[in-house]
Length: 213
Image (cartoon, rainbow, N blue to C red; front, side, top):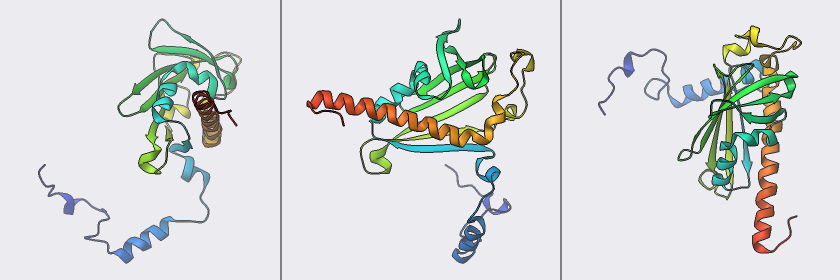
């Protein structure tokens, strides 16, 4: 790869060549606060993470099956396939009778599972849930997995792009809950952890003859 010669011409880069260690520490201190406004932390992105004592391959296979959303999420129920084989539709109970559409995009080699979703219609799946499963042995030096989950604040969260598709008696919109995404998704991640660890412990107990605690 050819060496980039334009680096010195790009303004405001922070590199050791132009900011010494003391200057870097000062910048980091300026960015570190005891208290942060909610929108600074949960504004444009919402990321949560959790350790799950279950092999990454098992977690990936579980997440890659769209039907399992009906188990570990708080409100998605009654999954069924649409006429398009790769898209499912289900009821999102937080929206009353709201239909939510979902397509799962999974990569086994990278152990990524992305849910492409949308309320009310399945033609433009703009709500993207990005999930990665990481072997805990790599990052924590112990068995199990670290699960990373990120949502990006798509502008449609602020304004419903398909108001004509909404049920007439529904008052709210999915984006109204954006400020609660971190807390809500954390609760759902705990559901995921409890389900997978319970079943993994049960299955291991069956193999070893030991009772599950």
